[in-house]
Length: 223
Ligand code: CA
Image 1: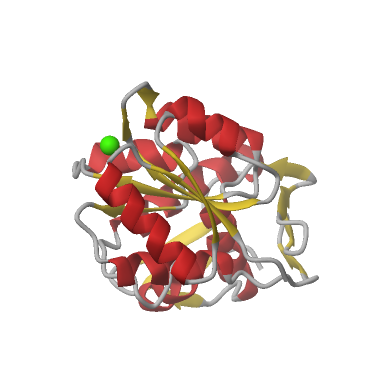
Image 2: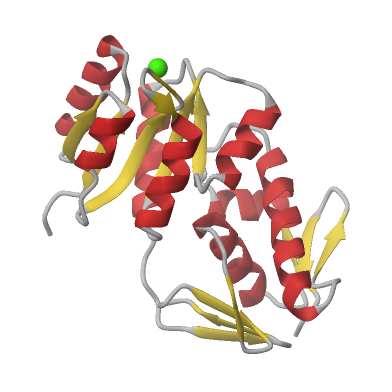
């Protein structure tokens, strides 16, 4: 297999060079863009993952995130942000990001997140739960026959719940399997993703698809 291509979008020379050197050392193929314009040019069909700094000199990183997501639905996008407010994280996830790291971060943690993102193994299972059909290989979810537009993390989360339909899946297990075992951040992101999933599923098939067991976990009520 050829090395996986990672696009680093970072205008800070020190951070950019450090990321480039580290990723090359790990055997990845690396492209480094310093601006929004360079990033748009550097995205190729071979790009597997983007590390995206939100503060760029020539444009809005969130808008770029949304555009990259539109151009390549299967792309993994990890935000690198100095902004620490929850609102920015929510905006980033809404713009299609899969994960985020707040600067300053440890390179070891970043590498663990990258490995977790690129490790998704294909499967040809199709899961059925009530009105839900989940084609894991095609990464497509349908409710009552209508495709529901899900971001990658939302899909992974729904797939885990659907594989355990009718049973509670603990928060710890969700964080370990959908995010990764090295996730030290807030589990707030899980609640945000659940809320979005509920809204999207409710729009197609009625409310109540996902039950909450407070402090324990979540359960897909469709079986
Ligand atoms: Ca910056």
